[in-house]
Image 1 (cartoon, rainbow, N blue to C red):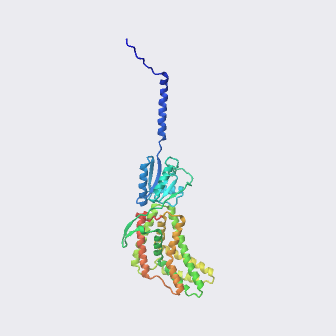
Image 2: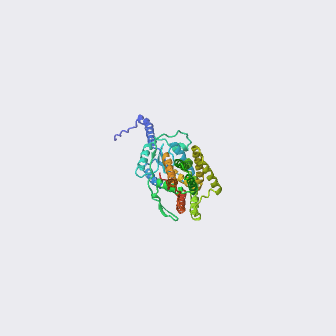
Image 3: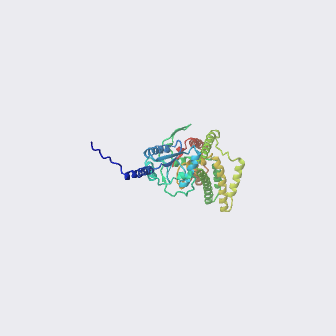
Length: 412
């Protein structure tokens, strides 16, 4: 009889440990699953047709493919009012005035504008910083209705890159708006706005009265005060209009409304240049002109220099109210274009000062020429007519851009 092999029986102790080993494996798996990074969202505000937004979109897609747990929430703001309202709230929370696109929010920091040289690296750095989940999501807080205090973190800013845009307009042909710049546009619009018949006739009449004075110092002083007061009134109007537009931000209907005003003003200026050869001011009738002349004579004829200065200043204010209407919307259109550019606050007002200086340049030339030669000289009707025609064409161009391609007018 062959000897039987001994059969090893499992120890009871090992059998008892199996459930503990199984539990340990399950717990380890759970730890591995929980260790997987959770999705992290960044928020991209863009405008349809915006060239800088399109460039940044390519970069974001590359990063989205590179980082598996990165999610990009996109918000179109040109044609979606809800997204625009959200952008306004985000800008207010981050203190990132004025709103402009492209606008990327990573955690509690932001990148506005796009520059191929350093914006991609800036975005990559912010993503690497917040990807582990250490950054608060400001946009999610706003969407969730959380009333958190304004974020005090640093703001990341990039200047938009240059982009070529060739546009064809009637009578002017093809225009490459890459050659435009905000200073150039400021000078051109201010110059064309300056040839305003509603203000020129008042200045020429004032000069006629001043040339009859024997006191040359008083003559220079009263004329200078009239010009300075006119410039100051125009500055107040443009600054107020700029702040109204900045308050509304990127609201679509405001931009479209001003674009329509620009188109209407352009049509009026072009047709008026052909149908009104004399280029006279239609905003004041003969009765009002006579009233103005009487008041101007009374102001200059005052024995008290102080009363004369006050009277001249008030008349300058009245004339410029009429002049603003006669400008066919130039100041409102320019401030709308200015608001589209992401600039520091002081630069907005600096550009307005430049605009007004160029706007008053023709008045200054006429005034100084008259004071030095003791003769009244003004711009010829033909010159003013061509300036009005060019101004009308420029308004047509800007009106069309404000409505259909506002990104072209974003200089900052």
